[in-house]
Image (cartoon, rainbow, N blue to C red; front, side, top):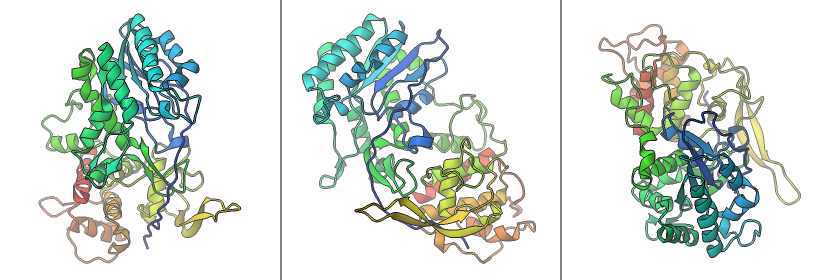
Length: 470
């Protein structure tokens, strides 16, 4: 029997601890983009903060390797606190003529009940003008001023997203107009873009976490200010798209449309580009996609979980099969296991129901618990996945996305393919995947279940899942 995790709704707010600053890249002959900002731009560590992301964490993915990107954004900082801690001074020690400094504050500056952060609007503008912009220009580098990132504020009555952090956003706009510095109004750009998108699509980019998803808040959280990977990439993309108009000299370093050099003319070229645009696959800067290369179990699981918009879960040592602390797919494996997305036959596991305590009881509150399944043994994420194993994971992810995982048919209702070597445990998965148009055979009616899955075939499956759940 396949079991999925019980649905539980919970919420908690997060105050992110700041990781160490990213070191300056060694290639001194290249120009460098520095980022000074707050938690919405910060770089996070999955082990401590997952699944939180800042836009500065992924900003470098939008540029060629002819320029460095160094993210010095840190959570909880305002313009004044950033300076008092010596962070801007450190940037000014490292920055050189021809470099760039993206500056984004205005969220923590408004916290009047936190004296070490608070600064009024006139003081905010003065610090930006004199310290962040003026001194950076004196060093021969180019500052780019930005409004605070937009929160996820949807007006149900008006049926649209509204601008947020207005007081300090307006102050930033005013300053840019007064001194004529390079300026990206990302607050307004985000809000305008959100109002062209589906509401749920926007919300899914923010740090709204189900139980076990957030490392810091395993009971769940509702955070409409910070981002997951999806939201961070959208913001980084919007900033990048504003560069040709606002900072045209940086345009030469932006990656162009054709990222992969080995897909031109391929039968699935458009499918690969679609998957790249949606984030199911990423550019590894090699310039090659390798469409006919084999796919591992871990790689495919990650791809289809992203396509099905299934959240990862915080890694729990000794509760995630053989996924060690450095296993790059461990968050996806953990989330898949908690939901019952990985068939038992792919783990050789013993499965038993357990009650997981998310928050211990205290004198005032009862414990928060979750009924789930416990696995032992291993998933073997580095094994090449076969086509029949692909079918099993793919259909489970599709049904999970549609909240129908518990309704999966376990009987063999028809034989779609002529193959006689489909593993008995996998027959119903293959048939169900075929019935949902996730998989097809060749013109002669064969599926070739024991053959390894290729990268291009994996992309096609992920795209089919994505299109079906929309």
